[in-house]
Image (spheres, chains in turn cyan, blue, red, purple):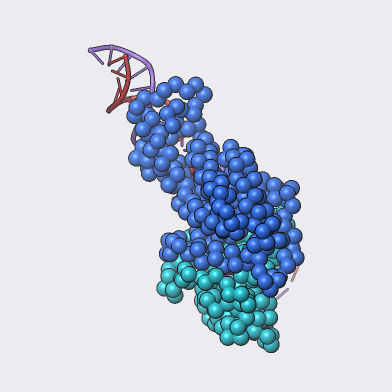
Length: 224
Length: 224
DNA sequence: ACATAAACGGAGGACATATCTCCGTTTAAT
DNA sequence: ATTAAACGGAGATATGTCCTCCGTTTATGT
Protein backbone atom coordinates (compact mmCIF):
# COMPACT_ATOMS: atom_id res chain seq x y z
CA UNK A 1 0.00 0.00 0.00
CA UNK A 2 3.01 2.29 0.28
CA UNK A 3 5.92 1.10 -1.82
CA UNK A 4 6.16 1.28 -5.61
CA UNK A 5 6.03 -1.69 -7.94
CA UNK A 6 9.07 -0.60 -9.94
CA UNK A 7 12.40 -2.47 -9.81
CA UNK A 8 14.07 -0.38 -7.14
CA UNK A 9 11.28 0.60 -4.81
CA UNK A 10 12.47 3.87 -3.47
CA UNK A 11 9.93 5.90 -1.63
CA UNK A 12 7.77 8.10 -3.86
CA UNK A 13 7.36 11.79 -3.38
CA UNK A 14 4.04 12.67 -1.72
CA UNK A 15 2.35 13.98 -4.87
CA UNK A 16 3.57 11.00 -6.85
CA UNK A 17 2.14 8.54 -4.38
CA UNK A 18 -1.15 10.42 -4.29
CA UNK A 19 -1.40 10.31 -8.07
CA UNK A 20 -0.56 6.64 -8.11
CA UNK A 21 -3.51 5.95 -5.85
CA UNK A 22 -5.78 8.16 -7.92
CA UNK A 23 -4.73 6.23 -11.00
CA UNK A 24 -5.54 2.91 -9.40
CA UNK A 25 -8.96 4.13 -8.35
CA UNK A 26 -9.64 5.61 -11.78
CA UNK A 27 -8.47 2.46 -13.54
CA UNK A 28 -10.65 0.29 -11.34
CA UNK A 29 -13.65 2.42 -12.26
CA UNK A 30 -12.95 2.67 -15.96
CA UNK A 31 -12.02 -0.99 -16.44
CA UNK A 32 -15.14 -1.99 -14.55
CA UNK A 33 -17.52 -0.05 -16.72
CA UNK A 34 -15.83 -0.14 -20.11
CA UNK A 35 -13.60 -3.17 -20.06
CA UNK A 36 -9.85 -3.68 -20.32
CA UNK A 37 -9.50 -2.19 -23.78
CA UNK A 38 -10.06 1.44 -22.89
CA UNK A 39 -7.40 3.94 -23.92
CA UNK A 40 -5.04 4.80 -21.11
CA UNK A 41 -5.69 8.43 -21.97
CA UNK A 42 -9.18 7.89 -20.61
CA UNK A 43 -7.87 6.43 -17.39
CA UNK A 44 -5.62 9.48 -17.04
CA UNK A 45 -8.48 11.87 -17.64
CA UNK A 46 -10.67 10.05 -15.12
CA UNK A 47 -7.85 10.33 -12.60
CA UNK A 48 -7.39 14.03 -13.35
CA UNK A 49 -3.80 13.46 -14.33
CA UNK A 50 -1.74 13.64 -17.53
CA UNK A 51 -1.00 10.55 -19.61
CA UNK A 52 2.66 11.04 -18.88
CA UNK A 53 1.97 10.25 -15.26
CA UNK A 54 0.35 6.95 -16.17
CA UNK A 55 3.42 5.78 -18.05
CA UNK A 56 5.77 7.15 -15.42
CA UNK A 57 4.12 4.95 -12.82
CA UNK A 58 3.24 1.86 -14.84
CA UNK A 59 5.53 0.53 -17.54
CA UNK A 60 2.60 -0.30 -19.82
CA UNK A 61 -1.12 -1.02 -19.78
CA UNK A 62 -0.53 -4.63 -18.74
CA UNK A 63 1.15 -3.60 -15.51
CA UNK A 64 -1.74 -1.32 -14.59
CA UNK A 65 -4.30 -3.97 -15.50
CA UNK A 66 -2.55 -6.56 -13.36
CA UNK A 67 -2.41 -4.24 -10.39
CA UNK A 68 -6.12 -3.51 -10.55
CA UNK A 69 -7.34 -6.99 -11.32
CA UNK A 70 -5.28 -9.05 -9.00
CA UNK A 71 -7.16 -7.22 -6.29
CA UNK A 72 -10.48 -8.05 -7.94
CA UNK A 73 -9.67 -11.74 -8.15
CA UNK A 74 -8.74 -11.80 -4.49
CA UNK A 75 -12.07 -10.19 -3.70
CA UNK A 76 -13.99 -12.97 -5.40
CA UNK A 77 -11.78 -15.58 -3.75
CA UNK A 78 -12.61 -14.06 -0.38
CA UNK A 79 -16.31 -14.31 -1.17
CA UNK A 80 -15.85 -18.01 -1.87
CA UNK A 81 -13.95 -18.49 1.34
CA UNK A 82 -16.60 -16.73 3.40
CA UNK A 83 -19.34 -18.78 1.77
CA UNK A 84 -17.52 -21.99 2.67
CA UNK A 85 -18.01 -21.10 6.32
CA UNK A 86 -21.76 -21.49 5.86
CA UNK A 87 -23.20 -24.60 7.53
CA UNK A 88 -25.61 -25.78 4.88
CA UNK A 89 -23.99 -26.87 1.63
CA UNK A 90 -26.66 -25.43 -0.63
CA UNK A 91 -26.81 -22.15 1.26
CA UNK A 92 -23.05 -21.87 0.86
CA UNK A 93 -23.19 -22.55 -2.85
CA UNK A 94 -26.11 -20.23 -3.47
CA UNK A 95 -24.57 -17.47 -1.42
CA UNK A 96 -21.32 -17.63 -3.35
CA UNK A 97 -23.18 -17.87 -6.63
CA UNK A 98 -25.19 -14.74 -5.99
CA UNK A 99 -22.45 -12.68 -4.40
CA UNK A 100 -19.94 -13.54 -7.09
CA UNK A 101 -22.45 -12.75 -9.82
CA UNK A 102 -23.10 -9.40 -8.14
CA UNK A 103 -19.44 -8.48 -8.15
CA UNK A 104 -18.86 -9.68 -11.70
CA UNK A 105 -22.02 -7.99 -12.93
CA UNK A 106 -20.52 -4.66 -11.99
CA UNK A 107 -17.02 -5.33 -13.23
CA UNK A 108 -16.59 -5.92 -16.89
CA UNK A 109 -12.82 -5.87 -16.63
CA UNK A 110 -12.86 -8.61 -14.05
CA UNK A 111 -15.14 -10.70 -16.25
CA UNK A 112 -12.76 -10.22 -19.13
CA UNK A 113 -9.71 -11.71 -17.44
CA UNK A 114 -11.51 -14.21 -15.27
CA UNK A 115 -13.97 -15.58 -17.81
CA UNK A 116 -12.73 -14.64 -21.24
CA UNK A 117 -8.96 -15.01 -21.26
CA UNK A 118 -6.78 -13.74 -24.06
CA UNK A 119 -5.27 -10.90 -22.03
CA UNK A 120 -1.77 -12.26 -21.66
CA UNK A 121 -0.92 -14.93 -19.13
CA UNK A 122 -1.36 -12.62 -16.20
CA UNK A 123 -0.59 -12.78 -12.52
CA UNK A 124 -4.32 -12.29 -11.98
CA UNK A 125 -5.08 -15.60 -13.63
CA UNK A 126 -2.49 -17.38 -11.52
CA UNK A 127 -4.06 -15.91 -8.43
CA UNK A 128 -7.41 -17.21 -9.62
CA UNK A 129 -5.98 -20.65 -10.24
CA UNK A 130 -4.46 -20.73 -6.80
CA UNK A 131 -7.10 -19.06 -4.63
CA UNK A 132 -10.39 -19.28 -6.45
CA UNK A 133 -10.61 -22.55 -8.34
CA UNK A 134 -10.09 -24.87 -5.35
CA UNK A 135 -12.71 -23.05 -3.32
CA UNK A 136 -15.29 -23.08 -6.05
CA UNK A 137 -14.61 -26.76 -6.59
CA UNK A 138 -15.16 -27.36 -2.89
CA UNK A 139 -18.43 -25.45 -2.84
CA UNK A 140 -19.73 -27.43 -5.76
CA UNK A 141 -18.56 -30.83 -4.53
CA UNK A 142 -20.08 -30.23 -1.11
CA UNK A 143 -23.48 -29.18 -2.45
CA UNK A 144 -23.49 -32.21 -4.71
CA UNK A 145 -22.56 -34.61 -1.92
CA UNK A 146 -25.45 -33.27 0.12
CA UNK A 147 -27.77 -33.95 -2.80
CA UNK A 148 -28.90 -30.38 -3.22
CA UNK A 149 -27.00 -29.45 -6.37
CA UNK A 150 -27.57 -31.38 -9.55
CA UNK A 151 -25.08 -34.20 -9.97
CA UNK A 152 -24.11 -33.51 -13.54
CA UNK A 153 -22.86 -29.98 -12.99
CA UNK A 154 -19.14 -29.74 -13.62
CA UNK A 155 -16.82 -27.15 -12.06
CA UNK A 156 -15.94 -25.78 -15.50
CA UNK A 157 -19.61 -24.92 -15.94
CA UNK A 158 -19.28 -22.27 -13.31
CA UNK A 159 -17.25 -19.73 -15.28
CA UNK A 160 -19.44 -20.36 -18.29
CA UNK A 161 -22.57 -19.62 -16.32
CA UNK A 162 -20.98 -16.49 -14.93
CA UNK A 163 -20.13 -15.48 -18.46
CA UNK A 164 -23.74 -15.87 -19.48
CA UNK A 165 -24.91 -13.78 -16.57
CA UNK A 166 -22.26 -11.22 -17.40
CA UNK A 167 -23.71 -10.85 -20.87
CA UNK A 168 -27.13 -10.25 -19.35
CA UNK A 169 -25.72 -7.66 -16.96
CA UNK A 170 -23.87 -5.81 -19.68
CA UNK A 171 -26.99 -5.69 -21.78
CA UNK A 172 -29.27 -4.27 -19.11
CA UNK A 173 -27.09 -2.36 -16.69
CA UNK A 174 -27.77 1.10 -18.13
CA UNK A 175 -31.49 0.62 -17.98
CA UNK A 176 -32.05 -1.61 -14.94
CA UNK A 177 -28.92 -2.41 -12.94
CA UNK A 178 -30.38 -5.33 -10.97
CA UNK A 179 -31.67 -7.36 -13.91
CA UNK A 180 -29.00 -10.00 -13.56
CA UNK A 181 -30.77 -11.23 -10.44
CA UNK A 182 -33.71 -12.35 -12.50
CA UNK A 183 -31.56 -14.58 -14.66
CA UNK A 184 -29.44 -15.75 -11.77
CA UNK A 185 -32.62 -17.01 -10.14
CA UNK A 186 -33.62 -18.78 -13.31
CA UNK A 187 -30.27 -20.49 -13.58
CA UNK A 188 -30.19 -21.46 -9.93
CA UNK A 189 -33.53 -23.10 -10.49
CA UNK A 190 -31.96 -25.13 -13.24
CA UNK A 191 -29.05 -26.03 -10.99
CA UNK A 192 -30.91 -27.18 -7.90
CA UNK A 193 -31.53 -30.89 -7.56
CA UNK A 194 -35.22 -31.76 -7.43
CA UNK A 195 -37.82 -34.40 -6.78
CA UNK A 196 -38.86 -34.86 -10.42
CA UNK A 197 -35.61 -35.71 -12.20
CA UNK A 198 -34.32 -32.91 -14.44
CA UNK A 199 -33.29 -33.37 -18.05
CA UNK A 200 -29.85 -34.98 -18.19
CA UNK A 201 -27.08 -32.79 -19.58
CA UNK A 202 -26.34 -35.01 -22.54
CA UNK A 203 -23.66 -32.70 -23.92
CA UNK A 204 -20.59 -33.32 -21.77
CA UNK A 205 -18.76 -30.42 -20.11
CA UNK A 206 -15.47 -29.18 -21.55
CA UNK A 207 -12.56 -31.34 -20.47
CA UNK A 208 -9.67 -29.76 -18.60
CA UNK A 209 -7.47 -29.30 -21.68
CA UNK A 210 -10.40 -28.02 -23.72
CA UNK A 211 -11.18 -25.49 -21.06
CA UNK A 212 -7.56 -24.42 -20.93
CA UNK A 213 -7.45 -23.99 -24.67
CA UNK A 214 -10.64 -21.98 -24.61
CA UNK A 215 -9.09 -19.63 -22.07
CA UNK A 216 -5.78 -19.35 -23.87
CA UNK A 217 -7.14 -18.89 -27.38
CA UNK A 218 -7.71 -15.40 -28.71
CA UNK A 219 -11.15 -14.16 -27.79
CA UNK A 220 -11.97 -10.53 -27.03
CA UNK A 221 -14.13 -7.65 -28.06
CA UNK A 222 -17.47 -9.21 -28.62
CA UNK A 223 -18.69 -8.42 -26.28
CA UNK A 224 -20.39 -8.59 -24.80
CA UNK B 1 -32.81 -12.81 -56.60
CA UNK B 2 -32.07 -11.07 -59.89
CA UNK B 3 -32.56 -7.31 -59.67
CA UNK B 4 -30.26 -4.86 -57.91
CA UNK B 5 -31.12 -2.97 -54.77
CA UNK B 6 -29.90 0.36 -56.14
CA UNK B 7 -32.31 3.22 -56.97
CA UNK B 8 -32.87 2.41 -60.60
CA UNK B 9 -32.76 -1.33 -60.80
CA UNK B 10 -31.44 -1.92 -64.23
CA UNK B 11 -30.30 -5.39 -65.00
CA UNK B 12 -26.73 -6.15 -63.96
CA UNK B 13 -24.15 -7.53 -66.30
CA UNK B 14 -23.54 -11.26 -65.76
CA UNK B 15 -20.19 -10.86 -64.02
CA UNK B 16 -21.58 -8.11 -61.82
CA UNK B 17 -24.50 -10.21 -60.71
CA UNK B 18 -22.22 -13.14 -60.02
CA UNK B 19 -19.97 -11.00 -57.86
CA UNK B 20 -22.95 -9.58 -56.03
CA UNK B 21 -24.00 -13.07 -55.04
CA UNK B 22 -20.46 -13.96 -54.04
CA UNK B 23 -20.38 -10.89 -51.85
CA UNK B 24 -23.60 -11.80 -50.13
CA UNK B 25 -22.35 -15.31 -49.44
CA UNK B 26 -19.02 -14.03 -48.19
CA UNK B 27 -20.64 -11.39 -46.00
CA UNK B 28 -22.98 -13.96 -44.50
CA UNK B 29 -20.01 -16.12 -43.60
CA UNK B 30 -17.81 -13.35 -42.26
CA UNK B 31 -20.53 -11.59 -40.29
CA UNK B 32 -21.57 -14.91 -38.80
CA UNK B 33 -18.13 -15.80 -37.50
CA UNK B 34 -16.66 -12.40 -36.70
CA UNK B 35 -19.60 -10.09 -36.14
CA UNK B 36 -20.85 -6.98 -37.90
CA UNK B 37 -17.77 -4.88 -37.26
CA UNK B 38 -15.39 -6.63 -39.63
CA UNK B 39 -13.64 -4.50 -42.21
CA UNK B 40 -15.32 -4.64 -45.60
CA UNK B 41 -11.89 -5.37 -47.05
CA UNK B 42 -12.17 -8.74 -45.35
CA UNK B 43 -15.54 -9.40 -46.87
CA UNK B 44 -14.09 -8.55 -50.28
CA UNK B 45 -11.11 -10.85 -49.78
CA UNK B 46 -13.40 -13.69 -48.66
CA UNK B 47 -15.49 -13.14 -51.79
CA UNK B 48 -12.38 -13.13 -53.99
CA UNK B 49 -13.21 -9.66 -55.24
CA UNK B 50 -11.74 -6.15 -54.92
CA UNK B 51 -13.01 -3.67 -52.32
CA UNK B 52 -14.10 -1.44 -55.14
CA UNK B 53 -16.68 -4.01 -56.10
CA UNK B 54 -18.15 -4.00 -52.63
CA UNK B 55 -18.75 -0.27 -52.71
CA UNK B 56 -19.95 -0.37 -56.29
CA UNK B 57 -22.71 -2.77 -55.30
CA UNK B 58 -23.57 -1.55 -51.81
CA UNK B 59 -23.59 2.13 -50.92
CA UNK B 60 -22.05 1.46 -47.52
CA UNK B 61 -21.57 -1.25 -44.92
CA UNK B 62 -25.07 -0.69 -43.56
CA UNK B 63 -26.70 -1.61 -46.85
CA UNK B 64 -24.73 -4.84 -47.06
CA UNK B 65 -25.48 -5.68 -43.45
CA UNK B 66 -29.19 -5.13 -43.96
CA UNK B 67 -29.26 -7.34 -47.02
CA UNK B 68 -27.58 -10.22 -45.23
CA UNK B 69 -29.41 -9.93 -41.93
CA UNK B 70 -32.91 -9.39 -43.05
CA UNK B 71 -32.61 -12.87 -44.47
CA UNK B 72 -31.34 -14.20 -41.16
CA UNK B 73 -34.21 -12.68 -39.23
CA UNK B 74 -36.70 -14.24 -41.63
CA UNK B 75 -35.04 -17.58 -41.07
CA UNK B 76 -35.58 -17.40 -37.33
CA UNK B 77 -39.15 -16.22 -37.87
CA UNK B 78 -39.77 -19.25 -40.06
CA UNK B 79 -38.45 -21.50 -37.31
CA UNK B 80 -40.96 -19.94 -34.92
CA UNK B 81 -43.76 -20.40 -37.40
CA UNK B 82 -42.92 -24.05 -37.97
CA UNK B 83 -42.74 -24.67 -34.25
CA UNK B 84 -46.20 -23.17 -33.79
CA UNK B 85 -47.57 -26.00 -35.92
CA UNK B 86 -46.55 -28.47 -33.22
CA UNK B 87 -49.49 -29.97 -31.30
CA UNK B 88 -48.13 -29.88 -27.78
CA UNK B 89 -47.48 -26.41 -26.41
CA UNK B 90 -44.30 -27.34 -24.56
CA UNK B 91 -42.91 -29.31 -27.47
CA UNK B 92 -43.50 -26.28 -29.67
CA UNK B 93 -41.76 -23.95 -27.26
CA UNK B 94 -38.85 -26.26 -26.65
CA UNK B 95 -38.40 -26.94 -30.33
CA UNK B 96 -38.28 -23.25 -31.14
CA UNK B 97 -36.00 -22.56 -28.22
CA UNK B 98 -33.44 -25.14 -29.30
CA UNK B 99 -33.59 -24.49 -33.02
CA UNK B 100 -33.35 -20.74 -32.59
CA UNK B 101 -30.44 -21.12 -30.20
CA UNK B 102 -28.73 -23.35 -32.74
CA UNK B 103 -29.04 -20.76 -35.49
CA UNK B 104 -28.01 -17.89 -33.27
CA UNK B 105 -25.11 -19.86 -31.82
CA UNK B 106 -23.59 -20.03 -35.25
CA UNK B 107 -24.31 -16.46 -36.28
CA UNK B 108 -22.71 -13.74 -34.27
CA UNK B 109 -23.87 -11.06 -36.66
CA UNK B 110 -27.47 -12.11 -36.28
CA UNK B 111 -27.10 -12.04 -32.51
CA UNK B 112 -25.68 -8.56 -32.74
CA UNK B 113 -28.67 -6.97 -34.46
CA UNK B 114 -31.34 -9.17 -32.97
CA UNK B 115 -30.18 -9.18 -29.36
CA UNK B 116 -27.78 -6.31 -28.92
CA UNK B 117 -29.10 -3.36 -30.89
CA UNK B 118 -27.10 -0.22 -31.55
CA UNK B 119 -26.56 -0.96 -35.23
CA UNK B 120 -28.77 1.75 -36.66
CA UNK B 121 -32.52 1.42 -36.79
CA UNK B 122 -32.40 -1.24 -39.41
CA UNK B 123 -34.93 -2.87 -41.68
CA UNK B 124 -33.86 -6.13 -40.09
CA UNK B 125 -35.16 -5.01 -36.73
CA UNK B 126 -38.46 -3.99 -38.24
CA UNK B 127 -38.76 -7.39 -39.81
CA UNK B 128 -38.11 -8.92 -36.42
CA UNK B 129 -40.74 -6.74 -34.81
CA UNK B 130 -43.23 -7.72 -37.43
CA UNK B 131 -42.56 -11.40 -38.02
CA UNK B 132 -40.72 -12.71 -35.01
CA UNK B 133 -42.00 -11.03 -31.87
CA UNK B 134 -45.67 -12.00 -32.27
CA UNK B 135 -44.79 -15.62 -32.89
CA UNK B 136 -42.46 -15.87 -29.94
CA UNK B 137 -45.10 -14.24 -27.80
CA UNK B 138 -47.61 -16.82 -29.00
CA UNK B 139 -45.28 -19.74 -28.28
CA UNK B 140 -44.69 -18.48 -24.76
CA UNK B 141 -48.32 -17.66 -24.00
CA UNK B 142 -49.47 -21.04 -25.22
CA UNK B 143 -46.95 -22.99 -23.17
CA UNK B 144 -47.88 -20.97 -20.12
CA UNK B 145 -51.62 -21.50 -20.62
CA UNK B 146 -51.03 -25.23 -20.80
CA UNK B 147 -49.17 -25.03 -17.49
CA UNK B 148 -45.88 -26.37 -18.83
CA UNK B 149 -43.83 -23.18 -18.90
CA UNK B 150 -43.26 -21.23 -15.72
CA UNK B 151 -45.84 -18.50 -15.24
CA UNK B 152 -43.45 -15.70 -14.41
CA UNK B 153 -41.46 -15.85 -17.63
CA UNK B 154 -41.93 -12.69 -19.66
CA UNK B 155 -41.55 -12.46 -23.45
CA UNK B 156 -38.72 -9.95 -23.07
CA UNK B 157 -36.78 -12.63 -21.19
CA UNK B 158 -36.42 -14.57 -24.38
CA UNK B 159 -33.91 -12.35 -26.15
CA UNK B 160 -31.99 -11.99 -22.91
CA UNK B 161 -31.74 -15.74 -22.52
CA UNK B 162 -30.63 -16.05 -26.11
CA UNK B 163 -28.00 -13.43 -25.45
CA UNK B 164 -26.69 -15.45 -22.54
CA UNK B 165 -26.52 -18.58 -24.64
CA UNK B 166 -24.83 -16.58 -27.37
CA UNK B 167 -22.09 -15.61 -24.95
CA UNK B 168 -21.59 -19.27 -24.09
CA UNK B 169 -21.45 -20.22 -27.77
CA UNK B 170 -18.95 -17.54 -28.60
CA UNK B 171 -16.75 -18.61 -25.75
CA UNK B 172 -16.63 -22.28 -26.65
CA UNK B 173 -17.23 -22.53 -30.37
CA UNK B 174 -13.57 -22.91 -31.37
CA UNK B 175 -13.00 -25.70 -28.94
CA UNK B 176 -16.33 -27.54 -28.79
CA UNK B 177 -18.99 -26.25 -31.18
CA UNK B 178 -21.94 -27.96 -29.51
CA UNK B 179 -21.35 -26.70 -25.98
CA UNK B 180 -24.31 -24.33 -26.09
CA UNK B 181 -26.61 -27.35 -25.88
CA UNK B 182 -25.41 -28.06 -22.38
CA UNK B 183 -26.41 -24.62 -21.17
CA UNK B 184 -29.59 -24.56 -23.19
CA UNK B 185 -30.64 -27.71 -21.34
CA UNK B 186 -29.82 -26.12 -18.02
CA UNK B 187 -31.89 -23.07 -18.81
CA UNK B 188 -34.80 -25.07 -20.14
CA UNK B 189 -34.79 -26.90 -16.84
CA UNK B 190 -35.14 -23.59 -15.11
CA UNK B 191 -37.95 -22.59 -17.44
CA UNK B 192 -40.13 -25.68 -17.22
CA UNK B 193 -42.97 -25.56 -14.73
CA UNK B 194 -42.70 -28.23 -12.05
CA UNK B 195 -44.37 -30.05 -9.22
CA UNK B 196 -42.25 -28.50 -6.45
CA UNK B 197 -42.73 -24.74 -6.94
CA UNK B 198 -39.63 -22.99 -8.27
CA UNK B 199 -38.12 -19.88 -6.75
CA UNK B 200 -40.21 -16.86 -7.71
CA UNK B 201 -38.50 -14.36 -10.00
CA UNK B 202 -38.62 -11.49 -7.56
CA UNK B 203 -36.79 -9.10 -9.87
CA UNK B 204 -39.39 -7.99 -12.43
CA UNK B 205 -38.69 -8.23 -16.15
CA UNK B 206 -37.81 -5.12 -18.13
CA UNK B 207 -40.90 -3.15 -19.07
CA UNK B 208 -41.63 -2.45 -22.74
CA UNK B 209 -40.06 1.02 -22.74
CA UNK B 210 -37.07 -0.18 -20.76
CA UNK B 211 -36.53 -2.96 -23.23
CA UNK B 212 -36.82 -0.53 -26.09
CA UNK B 213 -34.29 1.79 -24.52
CA UNK B 214 -31.92 -1.08 -23.89
CA UNK B 215 -32.09 -1.98 -27.59
CA UNK B 216 -31.73 1.58 -28.80
CA UNK B 217 -28.93 2.64 -26.47
CA UNK B 218 -25.35 2.32 -27.61
CA UNK B 219 -23.97 -1.09 -26.82
CA UNK B 220 -21.42 -2.92 -28.96
CA UNK B 221 -18.06 -4.49 -28.87
CA UNK B 222 -17.78 -6.11 -25.81
CA UNK B 223 -17.76 -9.05 -25.72
CA UNK B 224 -19.59 -10.43 -26.81
C1' DA C 1 14.38 31.04 1.69
C1' DC C 2 16.62 28.48 -1.70
C1' DA C 3 18.59 24.82 -4.47
C1' DT C 4 17.72 20.71 -6.60
C1' DA C 5 15.90 16.45 -7.85
C1' DA C 6 11.50 14.57 -8.71
C1' DA C 7 7.28 14.75 -10.82
C1' DC C 8 3.98 16.91 -13.82
C1' DG C 9 0.99 17.87 -18.17
C1' DG C 10 -0.03 17.19 -22.59
C1' DA C 11 1.48 18.07 -27.46
C1' DG C 12 2.88 15.27 -30.89
C1' DG C 13 5.50 11.37 -33.46
C1' DA C 14 4.96 6.64 -34.80
C1' DC C 15 1.98 3.29 -35.86
C1' DA C 16 -2.22 0.75 -36.87
C1' DT C 17 -6.65 0.18 -38.98
C1' DA C 18 -10.96 1.42 -41.61
C1' DT C 19 -13.64 3.70 -45.01
C1' DC C 20 -14.37 4.95 -49.44
C1' DT C 21 -12.66 7.02 -54.09
C1' DC C 22 -10.41 7.05 -58.37
C1' DC C 23 -8.49 5.55 -62.51
C1' DG C 24 -6.00 2.58 -65.71
C1' DT C 25 -7.26 -2.05 -67.25
C1' DT C 26 -10.28 -5.92 -68.33
C1' DT C 27 -14.57 -7.99 -69.83
C1' DA C 28 -19.39 -8.85 -71.29
C1' DA C 29 -22.82 -7.64 -74.57
C1' DT C 30 -24.41 -6.31 -78.99
C1' DA D 1 -15.19 -4.82 -83.32
C1' DT D 2 -16.99 -1.36 -80.49
C1' DT D 3 -18.39 0.37 -76.33
C1' DA D 4 -20.37 0.78 -71.92
C1' DA D 5 -20.05 -1.63 -67.74
C1' DA D 6 -17.46 -3.60 -64.32
C1' DC D 7 -13.11 -4.69 -62.23
C1' DG D 8 -8.95 -4.47 -58.85
C1' DG D 9 -6.54 -2.36 -55.56
C1' DA D 10 -3.39 1.60 -54.45
C1' DG D 11 -3.90 5.41 -51.78
C1' DA D 12 -6.19 9.72 -49.80
C1' DT D 13 -8.53 10.63 -45.60
C1' DA D 14 -10.00 9.92 -41.03
C1' DT D 15 -9.68 8.14 -36.52
C1' DG D 16 -7.65 6.31 -32.55
C1' DT D 17 -4.08 4.47 -29.46
C1' DC D 18 0.45 4.02 -27.48
C1' DC D 19 4.15 6.10 -25.59
C1' DT D 20 7.98 9.73 -25.48
C1' DC D 21 9.86 14.09 -24.74
C1' DC D 22 10.63 18.44 -22.80
C1' DG D 23 9.53 22.90 -20.78
C1' DT D 24 7.28 23.88 -16.40
C1' DT D 25 5.83 23.10 -11.66
C1' DT D 26 6.35 21.24 -7.01
C1' DA D 27 8.00 18.75 -2.85
C1' DT D 28 11.81 18.24 0.12
C1' DG D 29 15.91 19.08 2.97
C1' DT D 30 19.06 22.28 4.54
